[in-house]
Image (cartoon, rainbow, N blue to C red; front, side, top):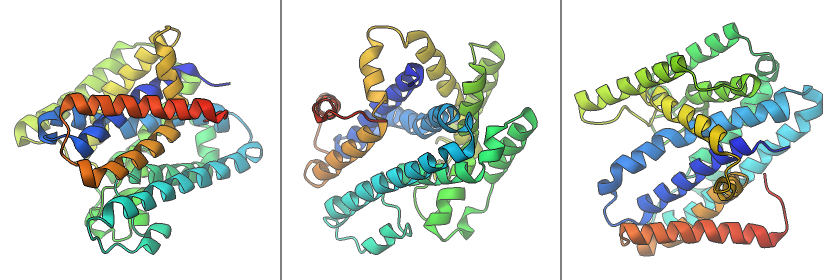
Length: 321
C-alpha cells in the first residue's frame, strides 16, 4: 500500500526539479535565477534519499531479506536501465552535437557518468549498498545511526583528488565529475528509515538543530560570497538542506489529504518516469533552444512537460512506482 504522504513529498521535489532543469537548460539568463536553482540543487537529492529511505523501510527492511532480495535486485536493474537511457540520450542528443570525444562504451561500463544522469547512477549504488547493509539497516538502533552518520560526515573531508574512477566516485565522491556520492548523503537515507519507524511530528529540537545547520550554510555564503562546495559535497552542503527536508515532511503530513494535493501526489507516484522523460525532452531541446527562453516561457514548458508526462502515463494503462 502506497504512502500518499511520501508521494506528496516526492511530488514537490519532482516539480521543483523539473522546473529548475528547464531553467538551467533553456533560460536566457540562468544567473538571474541562481537563488532558486541553487535551492533546488541543495534539497533535491537529499530529499529523494529521505523519501527512498522511508519507502525502503516499508517495502524492504520491515521484511525478511529472502522475501525481498529479488525485488531489490530488480530495482537495481530498473534504475540501471533508466541511467543508460538517460546517459546515452545525453551522449547522442547533447555531447555529439558539442563534438565531445566521450566514448559511449565508458558510459556502458560506468566509467563515464553523463551530466543529469548522475542522480540515477547514484540510486543504483544506493540500492546495491542497501542490499549489502541490509542486516544493519533492518535493525537500526541509536548507536548504529550515530556511527553511520559520523562516517558520512567524516567522509565529507575525504581527499577527493585521489579518486580517479567515476564508478568509485558514485560511492565516495570525485573531483573529476559532478557526483552525488552515496556515502556522504547516506544520513538522509537513514533519516527516512528512522522516520518510517517513528513517524516524526513537528519538534522544536529538530527545528532548532536543522536551523543551526542552515545558519552555518548561510554564514559560509556571507564569508566566502559563495555557497559551500557541492561537487564534491562539503559537510555544510550536506547538512544545509536538512531544515527544508524536515519542512517538506511536516508539510506533506499536514497536506496529504487535501484535495489540491491529489495532483502533486500523482506526480510523486511516478517520480522515476518524470525524471527520465523530462531529461529526454530537455536533451532534445538543448542544442536548438539553449539560453533562448524567458521565465514565463520556461514555466509554460515546465507545465507542458508535467501535464504531457502525466497524460502519457494515464493513457498507457499501467501503474508506475
